[in-house]
Length: 404
RNA sequence: GGGGAGAUUCCCGAGUGGUCAAAGGGGGCAGACUGUAAAUCUGUUGGCUACGCCUUCGAAGGUUCAAAUCCUUCUCUCCCCA
Image (cartoon, rainbow, N blue to C red; front, side, top):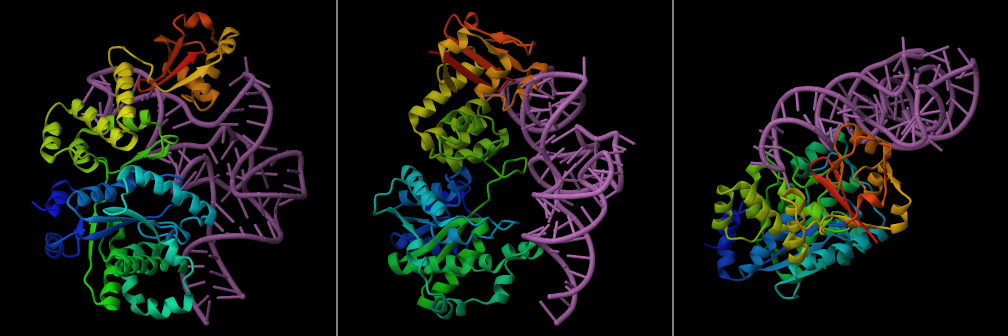
């Protein structure tokens, strides 16, 4: 079984320009490939990660992975898969994001400079000469052909600016540049990148007369048809400051039954047989395993253990609640008493007092397992002889105050 | 450049002088049922020092006792023509 089979078995493969040819090339020796991400925000989210999981599988099989940070392309904005034009981001913000992405990817991939390393297309895109670029690269692109791509067709409805229309040329140029610099002959990415990838392959063929490959992964959806990785707070970011390991763990713990097997294969490195076995067994145990594995991969084993312990305590038969999301409260604050509404707002379980009030009215507010039905109630030291206040909002949200 | 349409609360989308904090749907939150799942049903969904007050209907002005609704200017978007 070669690594294409592994990827296929794990549900990574959506489209491939030439899977026979690619398998052959891979058998003949290490293939250098790349995945690109545009640093358009302060953190990667789980939706970015599918190609990077694939990167690790491919590297495992002896191939060489380049993580291309789109410090240059982020200045333009990729219209693929989007119905609206993306806001322009300042150069400073892009540079800052690039660095944040690089660190997160280093953590996940573990760049060693040989089998995997980062690159930044800002290095070759930022100072391109427009006229030269048009003459050397632009002439290979047919507008007619570009317009036939699905990505652009969608935007024909809502509007497509010339800047975004150029994105494909830049990404194609990236591929060419990586081919020239590193003999990179394979680009992998989400299926929305298909058009851009194919365009790059064409460019390499025309300019260098060389053969390159493209491989795309499915856009991961949850079984109820939503884009995977969406939460109330937005995307499922990898930055623990944006999405705490607790929330991250909870996301996976609460996915739908039907998704467990698929996600185990995509987002963990457990053997395929084990993934299948887990999905066929006790589904709740499988979810716990999935949640632990993914949390461990992203945030480390320690964080995963803590999240699992906290979850067991919060939803199981009591136990150690010390790992649940926690804040410290001043002894003096508690001594003078604090209104329940303020307390819930302070915990962030309720964004406003009105929300807190609603929560209480609907019977979803608990403190130390006592149901709160009076919104004017004042909480003081007598509530926590043990030193902790455990607030619950509904059945799934929990917060702990330690007094200190 | 000319002509037309539009910008509404988290999203979509009603509303065209007071009865509008603004229909309906989606999403969210809570309750019931469960397995921390899904589906389903119910309630709720701007804020606050809450039977009242404040902020919201692209932005700024104006008319009026009263404006999301009328007038002026501006910004942005879409469509048709050049």
